[in-house]
Length: 195
Ligand SMILES: C[S@@+](CC[C@H](N)C(=O)[O-])C[C@H]1O[C@@H](n2cnc3c(N)ncnc32)[C@H](O)[C@@H]1O
Image (cartoon, rainbow, N blue to C red):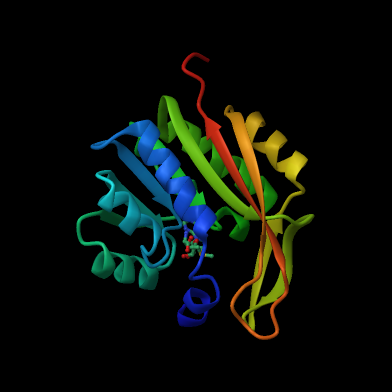
């Protein structure tokens, strides 16, 4: 976790995306942070901009870290696929759904559509790649990841019942040596008010 935080600590586009969401939903809004990790920077930023934050993560260690870092928020040790709460004005899923297979990403997006109120927002970030549950080495650890090309990610998000407002494409170089440049996709989406 420490290596991840060092390598990916500086993500200005993610911080800008959260500011975009906070501006639209307003203080007091309920926001879900999916795969919240350590709670930093995102749950912290959401709380600091006046949001009521619920964070979920499948890792008990991450939930403990997030509870310590952002005591104002509520965190649950939970798989996004099992999440059953609703009534959120927005949800963010930064680099968390990439740890699911593509079929589970679609299921997770349906869960999030049910969690978000009509007119509410979804922010999703992924690494651009044509992969489905593929084994990769990540920071010297064996993990399985999925990804899409940008047009395919757009289609998958819309198939789950969202309207994609914008996709930002960001070149990113992690702060590790040697660093492989990555393309980060930030999808700004909305659950339609009707339908
Ligand atoms: C790469 S980290 C990103 C953490 C944080 N969102 C950030 O932007 O720094 C991915 C997180 O997603 C969590 N995660 C993976 N699969 C999940 C699932 N099915 N449900 C909930 N959380 C999950 C992991 O435990 C991990 O904390």
